[in-house]
Image (cartoon, rainbow over all chains, first blue to last red; front, top):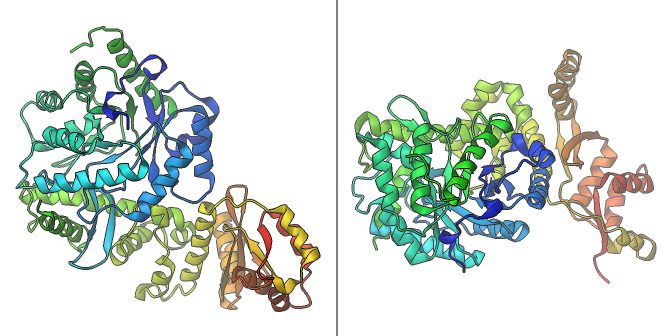
Length: 298
Length: 261
């Protein structure tokens, strides 16, 4: 296994990627905008055949593809669904992706003791406890052994946390990566959303401390996205431009980790492709400045 | 490692996501009061959105029939009645048609369940394997008795039989045409039964109303009956040569195989 967290960008890879979503399928295939890579949600391509899978094969001829899952439920105490893992393995074999990733979340649990295991189809929050970490490590190891490759695990935006949390999130990821051999997919927007929901005094400084607490070398990819404020809570809706505070945090991450593969996600109220690629272009400019040794504005 | 503690924690959150009313007070969260409730509601709202989006994609005719607002209510209700067990929402909804048929508030729409069955067949058609046609296997028709042959249809092909005019209903809602709706009302009043063949043209699923002979024939093939039995079920009025030509041109046939020596 290669080390997923040590893949710093060079050359053409100093371009950010975008999440490829259905409204942009045809335009991306036809116009082939300059992108470092494209990323898709793995579960959208689990079908046996059909148009979506054909589009993904076409996209694969033009770009490196990253498979980003939202449904493995890597922190589920009920374990990883064998059906899900079989479908993912088949997709990995079909697409030969650049990277495979999912989230530090749970999705599978019964509704009542002893009943069937359900799938929430959401990124549900984990407790930050030694037991939750052990479950996460076991499930990640199972997935990596099946796929015969390391995966990246993304930090979550969580709307609930648990009173008995006993491990700081950066320490949890450091331990996960050390024990399982996986890498971290660092979502800087999620760090900011959590800080805002926590109500800390200086969210940007708080988030920078999070990044500074991560060991160098574990981060294999960075995600950027927009968030929205609602009553009482900030929602990680991936429905707008990357906020200024998140760009600032991204620049801080680049200063700490160097140029890393970067993705801009936009999943709701999907804009014209040019708006999304414009956001990716900005990320690319920052990546190229870091790679050239320029100081990114603080 | 205390796995049972984490399993129970996760079960409790899952139960609160599916409960009829949001109540975060029993969850062991760091947040409390209104803030904890708002956090729980964020996840419950995600589930509502996922339910409506997934079922709206799979059941567009039902969505149009009942209206967007009522459909969202039905989707939320179905999510809690039959929650997903897998992480691919494209696979969730197989039981929606039967659930609609038995819904006590939908008794005035006795055809709704069959319309949902047709929607689901169209949805599955577009997700089915891209079966290739084994052209060489057609030679078996010339060298093997029909009793020993089976004609395999592609995985994307399906037949939906109903005692209601489901093909007309589908067509009227796709065309959104007043005359078509008038014809549908008349067909429903006369209890016009229809069978619909679902097949892919390109990547899109299409629906075609078929006659009783084609229905019997297709039903037999989909049941895996030998070619001779399928021909017998179709009867003398069925022209196999004409059908085979059309089926090959339309991409309905996967191949012909010998079932026994």
